[in-house]
Length: 368
Image (cartoon, rainbow, N blue to C red; front, side, top):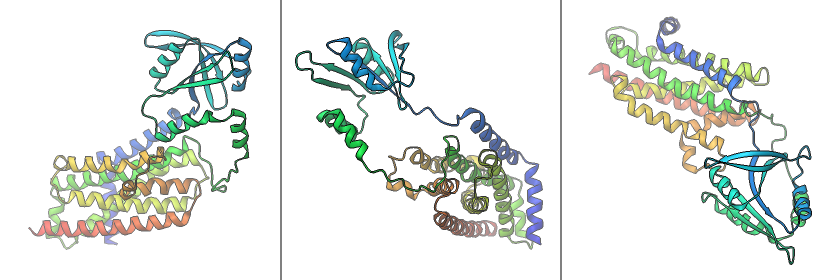
């Protein structure tokens, strides 16, 4: 009962403070960004800039017909590069926007200006062989360079036939598909929970240190761990509410909310424990700013791996927030719930260990 009354008191005090409303405002800001700024589906079409040099217009047109323009009619467009206006024919397919330029210099200029690959396709008038010259940016992977070197080593028709014969096995066919907007939720929840929660609980502790609240526990019968646990409970409940503010309008009833709540509580416990430990070694926010800044930046690095699957170094998996991002993703796609429960348990245990560390630190501080 004393813990409950302490929690209620801390919740009332927090609701009157500045940081409580930072969490609520941030949740609504993230929700507004997802609903009204981020599109349901991103434009994933690639832009290609080509220069074609064929012996006759009929042969060139026959080659262009392979682009399979969606409406069958190319669009005349004007592009800008290096303060110049360049005319081009636009052929839009399901996967690409192909711009056909009238000169090789224009193609090279646009490829350089738009930071993408350009190509010059020339047909020999004598033997009708097609020669391809690619203009790369210099930052392409070696695999892409190797592919460019060998892709035209065989007839295009043979390549297409071989591609059609490839067996495609869909992994996780029972998993739910997420829109591009919904795919941002794991990163947003990690930011709203782990990072913002870690910062907020530290701010609460520093504020209480400034007002002498923690030192007052040295002359009261109430143990300091109850004070800290009430702070953790306040932060966890606040994090839970703000996370649901973001999730419910976007996902509706398509989420296992029981699993989501369990995962939020466990990750919230971890973030709170980390914040308590950091706050235990500094007297105010300014002195701890460098450490907190580095920790928050480090905790955001797994988001890069989430958005760039090809970049996933081993050392990134040692950052705690890595499994938060992918744990939320598994929940939203209705993936491996056993994996989610396992990492939720790991976060809970880690949070308990950090809490014990913080408790020992605060006891030592009060006894000095």
